[in-house]
Image 1 (spheres, helix red, strand yellow):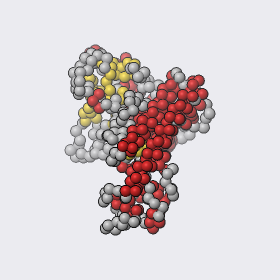
Image 2 (cartoon, rainbow, N blue to C red):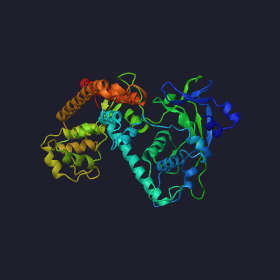
Image 3 (cartoon, rainbow, N blue to C red):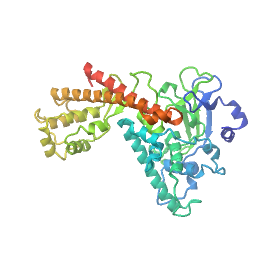
Image 4 (cartoon, one colour):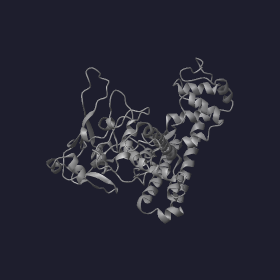
Length: 462
């Protein structure tokens, strides 16, 4: 840590820093105040020359037929220079976490084709379905980047990678990729917004941990170079980044400086960052993805899936506790209305196989007898419901799904307590933390399902 500070600041600047990096009660490293400060105080500023982004390292990587995103470029640089003391950014690279054993992507990569990691396999097997899909999406992104980097290294001829047959150490690249995925700041660059392009690794700021409470969040403020008068659409480079303390309430010695990474669910925090926020009560905010469960309820599957895909309602079906009352998403209500159409409506669906929101094939006044036309009318906002009976059925179906989720949660939480390998090896180190994350995810499933079920029973309007 001393090497990092000496690289970033002068001795006078170091003596004036109001924060230091240290272990926090959560067990990880964080930024902690070493003196009282006022709200909205500038804590420190990191100049552009210390920022790791495509402006500061892009010139080191020759153009190739394979174009790299910022995620891939930053990951490649960390991978190639992890042990390179001659690299300009070595003081920063050497301060990064050395391992990501608690991140579930590590569990996936280390269990592929191997039976050597039984705890990893067990934790992955016991994850809620709502957590598996986003985690698999992260794994797919990682694999796509691995394939792209392999292709780039064969064509670009960088340093020791002058030979096309040079291999890529996947575990080493995983370390680099997870540092980028979990520690980058999202900074708007240029005229368009892209989550894989507008990324910057910023030393010291990257020690700030996440808070789910916006009032407790500090702010990072970028200072940009002015756009070119001749070409204002050329991306502009951040000149510096300043971290400021939160705007509300006094800040005392020992308070941790936190950042809100985004308004994310626990499943997103878990799959992207490798942690979850503990639930303090059953009524805490939460949301659960039901894609796996609802897909199994589509009959006939192919026919109804085709409708939902054409009408842009395939997947992203969820339940939420906030805002009150706890409720299903509109997308979930839409698919439940389709599932609860009478079997006679399937003939209309077959005949109407080309309709879309822009060309709905809908009569001026849909007949009450053609329930598929009525379904299309609800999607387009022309009517609130298909029929009273359909509304009753979707509430009954939603209630049964919530009951099923509660029962599955109770069963799996009990199974976690009794799982032999977790009882034997999972109570210390990273395995203990992974075990607690899986427990927390299932607790959230139970609580959210319970809250939504109560809303259904009380007759809340959605």
